[in-house]
Amino acid sequence: MNKVLIFPVAALFCVGSLFGQSDAERRASRMGVGMNLSYLDNYWKGTKEKHFSDFAKPEEAAKREKMLADIAKAGFKTVRIPICFSAWMEIKQPYDWDNPDALKMPDSFVKWALDSGLNVIIDLHHSEFDRSVADADDPERIVNLWTKIAERYKNTDPERVFFELRNEPNKIPAEQWRWQAEQIIKYVRAIAPKHTLIVGFHEWNGRQQLIESKPFADPNIIYTFHYYDPFVFTHQGATWAGPALKDLRSVPFPYSADDKIKVPDSAKGSYIEQQIGNYKKESDPEKMYADLKAAKDWAIKNKVPVFVGEFGSYDQYSSMEDRCRHATAVYSALGKLGLPNAWWEWDGGFNMFEKGSQTIAPCMRKAIDSFSGR
Image 1: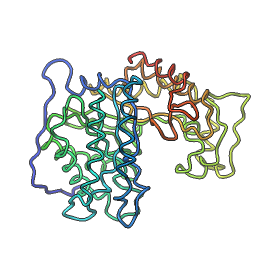
Image 2: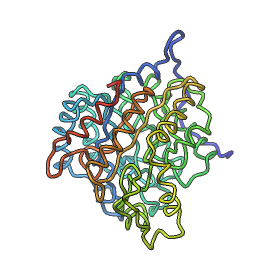
Image 3: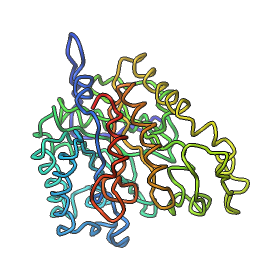
Image 4: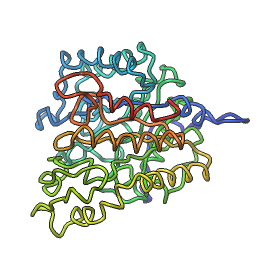
């Protein structure tokens, strides 16, 4: 892609330590077990005619102060905060904030998290919305969006605050996403030269896409991927993931010959039916460990740190016992491999709580504790 963006800033690159660990490696080693706290990503609660700029309410955001304190009390070290900053900036040039008061909410989240002793990931989430707003994900707009975010948070502690450039890039060719990421990195670096960036690759922060990609030139980056395997278990009943998964239920973890999985009519002939056919293999904890080890091997080969930004399971049709077995398989593998991570999510449909409570289920607590590096 040969398009050139012109902005009134110069590119500056920070350098890592000359000896020993780089800044990114050192900071990644302190991230440990983490948690995602959603709400500021929920653009769909807003009005499309206002490009969703009214989606978040201060009174709802205020409830997250206690949640952040609870996340820290539960032993998590890092919180990833997905934020749809895109809803609060103009769609067209000059790309000014058109709902500046809304920015007080992410400001508060960051402050509350830091006050609770957590590391904080400021994650640009859903910049493209649902692709129903023309030009929302124009590369120039996204870069301008990040220059404003970086300017806003440049004075935060770079040892504890991380900038994640874009959640799950999708429906964009690999080379175009790489070009776009390079532009974002360049202009963010001119404003925030010391902050560690978190960057994933195309196809929804795919693990395999990370393995097939090369690191960027900037040395102060932690690379990320999301791990929701096996997908037919973690997303059964998910309405947003298509009718085949919406209609799927009663998938155990791991595979059991005694529990035959019924293929819904909506899944017949689809990749979901194929995944159900391969479920015995895909749900084998040894296979899942091998998947995660492949990402770790990529990190070792390239001498860069890797962070698992999302993993978890939807609670609609899964039993807590199955979800805990799945969580244990992932957490124990992440611990053995020394991969920092963030569970999705604290208080939504992927939560760890005992039903009807705000208390982490005992078997989920054991799963978390299986991460030996905690």
